[in-house]
Image (tube, rainbow, N blue to C red):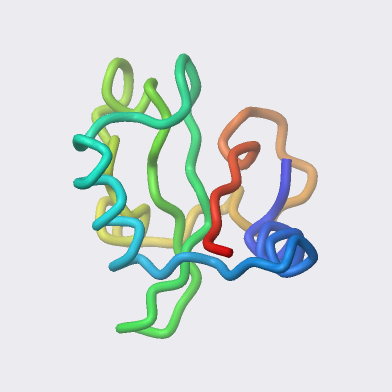
Amino acid sequence: MRTWDQQKEFIEQQGGQIYTLAEIKEIFIEYGSTWLFPKQDIWVAVWDDVNERKDWFSLGEKGITQFKHLGSSFLERFKFYPTWGDDDDVIGEHMTGVIYKK
């Protein structure tokens, strides 16, 4: 589990860059508007460059089968930043997936 800042740091350590919200939306559509992480409720860290803020994007299978938020920005969907997004003591699977561009 990684907070938003920890995901960004990990991505940079790998020589990568965090996706923008617009870029991850394009990837989601190009991938067929389906989940990338099977059987999980995964949100990946993204940067909303329009509003200049941290955000998370839903790419887990549970986002469609259980929670109906697959392909959503957390901030656009729920209108607030998730409390778990910056909490490094969270138990769960939300922040285990990481994707980035090289």
